[in-house]
Every structure is written in C-alpha cells, then in structure tokens.
Amino acid sequence: MIDTPASEGPRLTGRGAARRFELFEQLVALLISEGFAGFTLDDLAARLHCSKRTLYGLAGSKEQLVRAAVVHFFRRATTRVEAAVDTETGPEARLTAYLKAVAAELAPVSPRFFDDVAAFEPAAEVYERNTRAAAGRIQQLIDEGHAAGAFREVHVPFAAEVITSVMVRIQQRHVAASTGLADAEAYQHLAELLLHGLTR
Image (cartoon, rainbow, N blue to C red):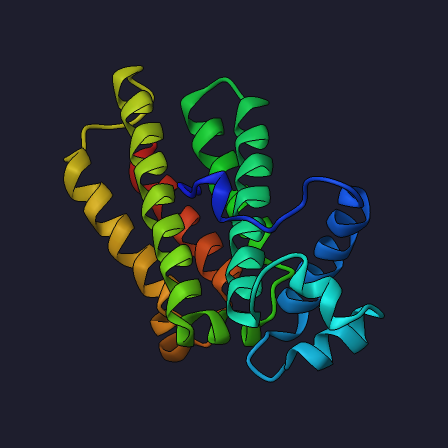
C-alpha cells in the first residue's frame, strides 16, 4: 500500500529507542481512535503520561508528529496486507485477500481520524499516496489473474482506472459523505463488485 521513505518516520533510534517506540505505538493508537485535530501537544503528553519534551524527542512539532503517525499506520498496514496476500496462491484468492486485508486494517480506525487526515494536507498527501499505491497493487494482482486465465477478459487499464477513482473518492471522504459508509465498509463493497465482475 505505502510508498513512503523510512526517513519520514519518527526518531526511534539511539538510547531509549524501545521506550520511544512503545510511546509512539500508543500515540498512533490514540490518534486513529480519536483523531488529532482537537489535541494540543499538552493534551497528547497528558494522555500518554509523558512530557512534551519526550514528544519532541519523536518529532519537532505536532504537525510532524501527526504525519509520522499517519506514515507509521500505513506502513504497518502495508506489511500486514502483503503478509495476507502471501498466504494465498490462486489469483482470485490473492486479490480477495488483498482487498479484505485492506478493509480489516481500516476497520478499527475512527471516522474522526479520517476526517482529520483529509483536512490536514501533510497527512492527506500520505493517504493519497497510499491509495494510489494500493490501486497500482490491485492492478498488478488483476494482471496476474488475467495472465493466468483466472479472470475473464476485461480492459485491465480501464478496470484499474475505475478502481483508482473509487479508492480516491474513499480517501477524500466523498464516499463516506454520499453513502454513509466507513472507509473499511466501502472497501468491502468494492471488493465484492470487483470480484464478481472479474471472475468467470
């Protein structure tokens, strides 16, 4: 899913790295559960039972901290999604595993977090980059299935364009606004439509 350099993550090396990593994991869990727009650094420090200085040890500002958390969330999700795909062999099973794993990774995330991401350009850019990387991965999986004869004849670039358009609309919160579906639910419905349209 993600195409983000490791250098864009938090500062987790050196002395106390294990404690900083644990703290950062707690921060990511807090943000995806409650969003971040309403938090100040003082609020975050209080909720995480640490000092602002400790948070500044992770990133230089709240904005950098939020962006690092969003990057970390998608990088971790990517690892788990690809692990799910690697457990399958057939093209249909691999595509199904990918889409279901994406939905599963997004399921615990609160609508507030996605709304805040959409409103904060540095985080929105990360989500958009992930969305386009995911769309490219789906096209690759469709290509594999088409080459193996598992999927019926379709215009693959057109199918990929449709999929990308829907995924971008999900990412930009348009689907949530027009349908009331959470991002994870929207991915589940996209998976159903896609698989029924491709399989013989």
